Length: 313
Ligand SMILES: O=P(O)(O)O[C@H]1O[C@H](CO)[C@@H](O)[C@H]1O
Ligand SMILES: Nc1nc2[nH]cnc2c(=O)[nH]1
Image (cartoon, rainbow, N blue to C red; front, side):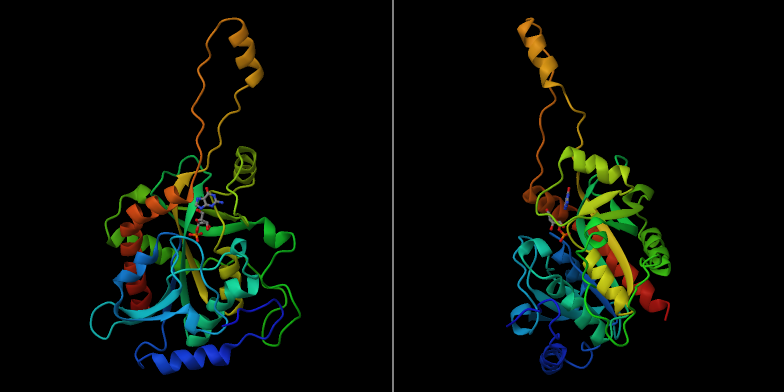
C-alpha cells in the first residue's frame, strides 16, 4: 500500500478496480457520502447491508492513527425499500498525523469518482462562540483557514486539465443542503438550540489553542475550531461534489480572562487571600467521550438529511 505524495499521479484506477471487485452492484455507486469525525464512526450504524472495506486494501489510502477513527470505508443502504446507497469514511486523515495533503484528500477524490454527488462531512470541534454549548451541532456556512491562506493548501500544484485553476469558495457550503439540514432537524423535532449555524476555523494542530489563539480566532469571526474538514471541503468542491459540514461541539475553547500573578503575589505578601479560578485543560479523551455521548442526535440528523436529499431527486 502506498499513499499519495504531493504532485504524484493518484492511483485511482487500482483503487476503483478493487472496489468494483468487492462490492455488490447496488452498493457500487453511492449517491451520498459521510465522513465520520472523531468519536463519530457510529454515524454509519444507520446503514444496512453493510460491506466494510479496510483502507489497507485500497491503494493510495493512508492509515488513520488517531484514537476514535477507524481505517475503513463502509458501504450500505439507508431508508426503506431499495434504499439509498451511501458510503461512510469511518476514519479520516489529518495532516498532523504526518499525512500529505494529497493523502488527506485522496478518499474524497475516490468517492467523487464512484459517483457521490453530496458529501456530509462531520467533525468534533471546540466552541469559540460563547453561545454554543457542548453537544450543539453546528451547520457550517463558511470557513476561516489560515493554513490555506499561507501556503498549506491541498490544491497547490500544477494546473490540471478539467479542473479550475482558481477555485471559488464563496458558495462552498451548499445552501440547498443547509436548508435540508434545518428541515431534517424540524422533522426530527429537535429543540431549536440543538442546531446552530456558524463558521469553522481550520488549524493544523496537533496542539490545542492557547487562550490568546482562541481569542484571536474568535475575533477573526470563527464560531468553532478544529484540525480537519477544510482540505476535504476543497477537494470535494474541486471535484464538483456538493458539501454539507456538521460540527459537533465537544468542548468550549478555554479563553479565561488573565489573572495577574503580580497582583496575587502582592496580595499574598500583604496577607490577603485572592480567589483563583481553577485552571482547565482539554484532552482528546474528553473530545471522544462527548462525541460518543452525543453521537445519537448527529446520527439521526444525518440519516434524516440523507432521506431528504434522496427525496429531492
Ligand atoms: O476533526 P475531527 O477529525 O473530528 O477531530 C477533532 O478532534 C481531534 C482533537 O481532539 C482533532 O483531530 C480535531 O480535528
Ligand atoms: N483545534 C481544536 N480542535 C478540536 N477538536 C475538538 N475540540 C477542539 C478544540 O478545542 N480545538
